[in-house]
Image 1 (cartoon, rainbow, N blue to C red):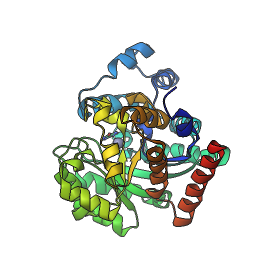
Image 2 (tube, helix red, strand yellow):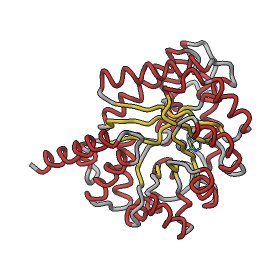
Image 3 (cartoon, helix red, strand yellow):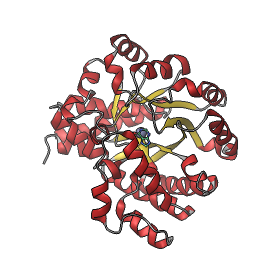
Length: 339
Ligand code: HPA
Ligand code: ZN
């Protein structure tokens, strides 16, 4: 058992960086391919898993978009989301802020409402049956145009009250935050929280743009911020949450060894870093495994792990009173552990 495994299991956590389509396990992919009578390149679990070896973000994205082609009906999206929630519950996740990629579905003819309603009904069920609260974040694909993003913003209007915010994901290099400056300004005006993937493969300048020009509320990944000491200072002063994803970083060769993860340095620098799973079906583990592996690789102390769990709620889009209640739950879980 990993060092601190019991502490990690018992700590209430929030997950702030999770793409629901990235939780599509190959077992379910094969089952839905059969249910929907769709041909897929994988015939066995072994075939699928053998393909999950990536040398960069794009190699992963190619497979990620191919995999989700099997998702067609509202029930498919409900089942996908429900499966994630049951896994999250096993890791003591109490709150999730979930990304999804509507353009990856509407582009292939699956209606926005089919996708969104399927996810939302599972999230409601998760709150009722598992006590896991959730918020949904609509992500724009950055390899598409800003105009495409505006079209999605318009088409999604009837659902706007269901989203806490918007995100920006997909191929980073060559698609800087400023490409979406007008779109994100409009989203801000409409009351959405703003998140952007930045500094995963892209340079520190992309994180600067996201933070200083766009004014995002949260940076997803943000690894390469650590190359820019002045930027580190800004991140500390503003306490902008960073959603790090250790096993994702390793799988996509953002780092070549988990011991090179920036998480410990970010904690020591006083940054609001959190640990998350990103695309757990593709990267070898859900949030608990991310905590466990980073704990061993970076020789984290219990104080570091407790700080990461606290940061996950502090960095969330929950209200101040909701955050306080979750932080109190952490304190009470620790008291039980020490008895
Ligand atoms: N980066 C960019 N786009 C993504 C990711 C990621 O880690 N996961 C799903 N879409
Ligand atoms: Zn991501």
